[in-house]
Amino acid sequence: MEIVTFDVLKNPEIIEEIGVKSFNNFYSKEKILERLSTQHYWANIARENGINLGFQISYIANNSETYFWLLGVIPESRKKGIASRLIDLQCSSSEEHGHKEITLKTHLGHPEAIRLYEKKGFKHFHTEKDYWGVGKDALYFKKFLPQ
Ligand SMILES: CC(C)(COP(=O)(O)OP(=O)(O)OC[C@H]1O[C@@H](n2cnc3c(N)ncnc32)[C@H](O)[C@@H]1OP(=O)(O)O)[C@@H](O)C(=O)NCCC(=O)NCCS
Image (tube, rainbow, N blue to C red):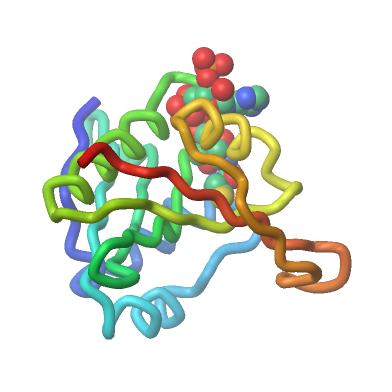
């Protein structure tokens, strides 16, 4: 398995394809472009034998902070450490960029992601009620990077 950097603005349909396989509901490629076209972002794809297995996209939130926006691994390739590698890579990139922290939002509908983030050193620091609709609170997590 290899992890490669990826130009989302050139090929948003590839992210849409992996995202649709990884999430119950996923953004259209138009929405992905809309979000990223004004951001300085990092995107990585995990691949094996030409098959896309997972991806992550993050972007610069401000001078000291990375926002970890999207992470997904296709169901048949889960529990093999792919998401962990994608997170580790982003932490290194953010650290090299001089950022002090990485933040993200998730919700209780993604318990496996919550366990993963906690295992990777992210801490829950804020809850925004009904952020994604009634009963779907946003849980904010943060990880401080070594300085
Ligand atoms: C969450 C997700 C990205 C994890 O990807 P993955 O490649 O399977 O994760 P890893 O193999 O690196 O798992 C690392 C750790 O995460 C946790 N974890 C991952 N899957 C889990 C599961 N099904 N149940 C419980 N814990 C889980 C465990 O702590 C695991 O460590 P362990 O293997 O030592 O137990 C993947 O399940 C996914 O794409 N889910 C749907 C989309 C999603 O939830 N994205 C994140 C939204 S915020």
